[in-house]
Image (cartoon, rainbow, N blue to C red; front, side, top):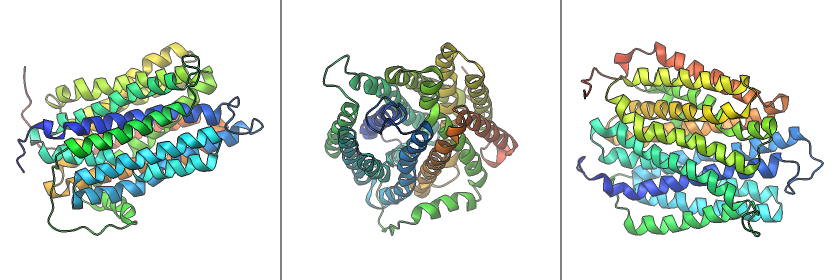
Amino acid sequence: MEKQKSLMTVAPLFLVLFIDGMGLSLLFPVLNSIIIDPHSDFLPSSMGLGMRDLLYGFTIGIFMICWFFGAAILGDLSDSTGRKKALLICLLGAFFGYILSAVAVVEHSLTFLIIGRVIAGFTAGSQPIAQAAIVDISPPERKARNIGFILLSLCLGFVVGPITGGFLSDNSFVSWFSFSTPLYFAAIISLLNAIFLWFVFKETFYRTEKIKIQFTRAIHIFISAFKHHRIRKLSIVFFIMILGWSNFFTFISMFALERYHFSPLRVSLLLAVLGVGFSIGCGFLVDYFVNRFYMKWIIVFSLFIVAFCMWLVIRIYDSTPLWILMLPIGTGIALAYSALVTLFSNQVNENEQGWVMGVSGSIMALCFGISSLLTGYLAHFGVNLPIYLATIGIAVSAMGMLIIPRNAIEPDQQFISY
C-alpha cells in the first residue's frame, strides 16, 4: 500500500479516538463521585474512606488489567483480519460496557459496575490499533506528526469528556440528569461511531497469513518488549514513565476531592484543563519540536518539567495553582509520549507495527492496572502518596532516558530550519 496515501483515508479513526478519550475521561469524575463521596447512595453510608479508596482503585484497576489482556489479542487480530474489524469490536465492547455500568449506577450494584468495566476493558484496545493504522500510511518524516494527531484526537476527547460528564450528571441543569446519564450518553455515541466506522472506514492493512490468537499473548508481548534488543531500553523507560503517570491521572480526582472538596463538576473541569495541556502538546508542539531537536532530549526535558510540576501540586496548599499546573503537566506528558511511541515505531519494520503498538498499549494497560490496584490501598495512608509516587516515577524515567545513548535509538538527522 502506498505510504503517500491520503491521511483522509483514516479520518474516521480520529472520531473513534475522540470518543475513546471522551468516554474514559467522563467516567473518572463519575466513579470518583459515586464511590469516594460518602454522600452518594451507591455504597452504604457507613462504609469507611479506606474501603472506598480500595474499591475506587479496584474498579479502575480491573478495567486496566482486562485492557492489558484484551489489547494484545485485539492488536494481533488487527494484524490478522485488519484494523477495521478489530476497531468495531472495540466500539461494540465499549457500548455494552457503558450500558451495563449505567444500569449498575441506577440499581446501586457494584457487581454490575465491575462486570461492565471488565467488558469495556477487554475491548479497550482502539488506541494502539489506530496508531498502527496511522503508521500504515505515514511516510517516515511525518510519523511523529501523525501520531501526534492521533493523540490530539484523544486529548480533545479528554477536554470534552469531563465537561460532558460534569454537565450530564448535574441535575441542577436538567432535573432527570444523574450519574448514569453520562454512561448512557457514552454508550450511544460508541454505537453510532461503530455504525459510522462500518460504512466510512477503508481498511489500511492486509495480511495473507493467519495469526493464532492466544489469551496468554498479552504476557508474551509484555515480556517480548524487554527481550527485543531494539526496544528493550525504551520499554523500561516507558514502563516507569507510565507507572508514574498512571498514579497521577488515576488519583488526581481523589486528590482534588479530598484536599480541596471539589464538586463533581469542578473535578470534571480540572481534568478538562489537563486535556487542554494534552492538546497543546500533541496538536501544536510535537511536530515543531521533533523537527528541531532530537527526540531523546524532548523526552528528557519534558519529563523533568512534568515531575517538577507534580511536586508543586503536592507542596502548594492552594487550589488556584492546581488549575495552572495542569497545563504544563498535560503538555509535557503529551510531548514525551508522542516522541517515545515514535521511537518505538522507528525501531521495527512495517510488518511489526501492529506488534510494537500493541507493546506500548500493553505496557500502558498493565501500569495503570498495577498503580490503580496498589495505590487504591496506599491512598488510605494519605491522599498525597499517589502523587508522590507519580513524581518519583516520572523523574526516574527522565533519568533513565538520559543515560540511553542517543545514537542507539535515533540516527543523526537534518533538522528543518525556518
